[in-house]
Length: 263
Length: 268
Image (cartoon, rainbow over all chains, first blue to last red; front, side, top):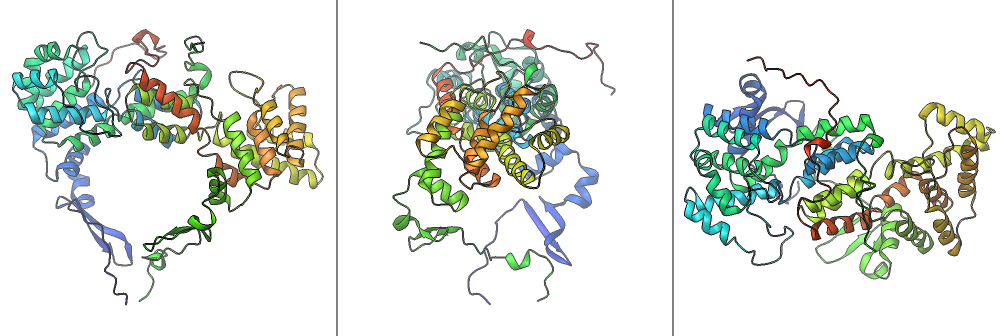
């Protein structure tokens, strides 16, 4: 027998017991103490299980409703969104379906309307909470990175749309609904202070800002919020990619006339 | 202990001749010491050796020429490059942009499927020719079964401006006269005279050139995986250097909705 210690994956999230005839197959799986295939499968909603995965406890009805509402609001950013356009670019060329999701994830990960913006927005919530003065100060003097990173610094206040004009109706609808259904302090405050914050930021609130407030109300850490935001926006990317794959490249914009190479 | 699963013999037991690193500071690739035997290699020679086991500065140089002439157009409208440009405009990272564009390059219209498919077609065609079929029979069978021949035809334009410079380059390094490249052009001659009017595209040219150097479809595929990166990166960088979010923005009226506009109400 080898003297080398047996290396293991350390996790608090997931526990397994083996099948009697195969130590590589799990007979039962537990997440947060709950039997997934014996209990959660029958008794929980998908949204509840999603919350359990991230927070390791069963959500309250308000938390479940809030996450459900957020998931619906984010499920399809629409075919004009950068991440969905990336997935459609995969579709029209007949790329693999997995590559469409990879493309949507890679593009949707960014500082503009993407997961990294949500990450930074949560950092703002952590620092400012519901102090309008603190928000004003932080927006006026945003944090400067102390050294180079693979992520570039934000170019606008996280959670707001630098190319927007006024807060779009779906964003307002989602914010109002989530503030009501989730009973969360920060969503409620954001709903009341939206116009003031927009004046500080110089641009309207975006879905990323609503998502950040919702996830902060759900006690998500910035990295958890970033990860979940990446996942929640994929369904629309998937279906739009499949549609464009069927329609083909000839029906998809190529921007032949819009491309101008400087001499 | 009785074996319960095929996996058990591999538990804590990955045996490989491919290579690896040791804590003593030695790095080995396919039996060669990287620091002693391979440090003078060009990157393409290293990649060729890693991907196929072949040691050939000629093939490496041929591939390098292909990558420069054929697969590195910095145009953000090309669909894999477009992903990279979108990543830039959305302020994602360069690595995510490159990874996504590499993944999307495994496409049907262009990229890795035609690359692997054209090589496969030439090998199959050559075998069938040797078995006595005519070229016409081979091509007609391919079209009947697959409705296309990988390596022939091209979206957007009919000809392929890369063919001539690629062949010039190939000849300059002593390639370009083998049986597979000649077969590739013979197929082109047949197809361009047919009702399809397909012309040769660069995938067939590269497939023929590399098949003549002994590369099989899988070897070309592995080598080509990263081939488009030098065209994708400039697209990311350019978008990064321009205002965020401004890569071909689309207003709502740019959606051509073809479905039913009736507003329905969700059953509660």
